Length: 212
Image (tube, rainbow, N blue to C red; front, side):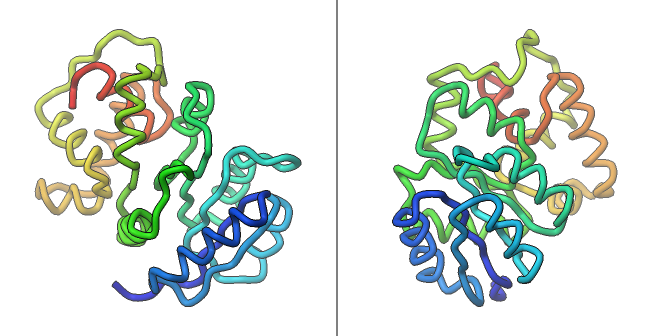
């Protein structure tokens, strides 16, 4: 894989942030890794540097991680965002599943190997969600929606299974010999059916309802 441009790590705990920057640098997957100790500082760096991926702590004082994610999505749409948290409570997970994230990492279980796997997949246009998160979704029965179990068509189930593997719409389209726009239509249709707002929320819904 070609090296990404700079990767930004945003965390208000300086020691944690610096440790994560070191882990990112260790992967050798980017030209440089940069720390930001607040959401405001992150926005400043994004205006000055060519950032390809941002790892964002969801719980931060001042400009919260959730609001920072929304700002980045609006102001820097080419930046891929991975959400990070130390918490595994339902409220936090619910919040993260509603954001348009390329991946989710639980900081307590983040290792160099996992950082590497995450950056590899996100750089390739795929989604990354830790195995621990998938287990939490099943065990805690997170509810991105309160809708009853939804019946999907055969084609929707094909798309859903590939989405759960972290495949991008483009890759799914190539696999199923369809247009990427068609895959996006299927994805948006499933989001509407399940009243979810993101691919992560859709996958969580599917896991909770025994569809995966």
